[in-house]
Image 1 (tube, rainbow, N blue to C red):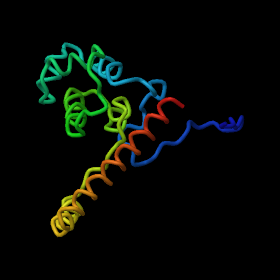
Image 2 (image 1 turned 30 degrees about the horizontal axis):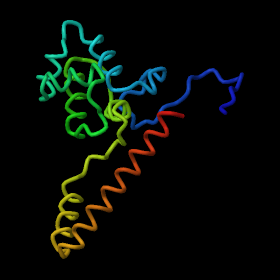
Image 3 (image 1 turned 90 degrees about the horizontal axis):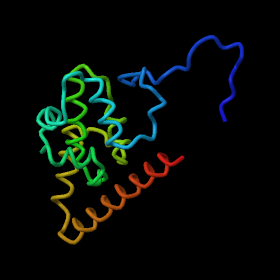
Length: 155
């Protein structure tokens, strides 16, 4: 439990690498539908159809997420980033971290080309059975990371 220092007159400091340190902490734990609805409200005149077009996704898919009739745990990372980019282009402050957490997904780092290329080179050098093992291991790591995110959303 965090103790309040009565002599402290400054607000809590944020990670200097955080792109939007003013992010409202009261919104933690909201799901993707709630986040998208809140962000759309901050983009006057914009609709779900506008968002779908700007993010490069189909309107029925976005609408299903907004109505919670379609799960969001398997939304592609590039799609979540495209949603962030669309909102930012409209002047709405949001972060990839906020979007991924709302979708119940771990926030992946952007792979730099050198690291990604090295991984691909190593993968291609493996025999086929070891390639399959590597894929299973990577999928297990991703499931574990997703489970960790789910636990932190509940806490």
